Length: 99
Image (cartoon, rainbow, N blue to C red; front, side):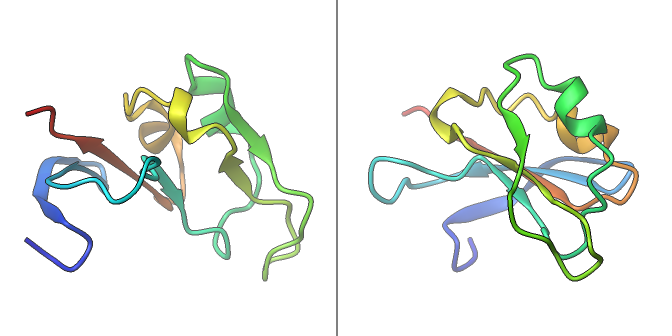
């Protein structure tokens, strides 16, 4: 287990890594993490999200784009659709283990 309380990836493919989180810190765990400096704001992730919770940030990243982000992490179902659609492989999806 690494420093982020994650086991190794439980699903990998096409550069996608879906992790199961061993412990949850606090009330809210980030289920989807974007490498915002590399996001080009194409919107493919937003169109693939069944919960429609991916939005574009107001800030501009290092590439000059408004990066995508999940503003309602508690609504996310960790399906991984966003990560599968991302052409730049900048999205990490994590799932919590229910004990």
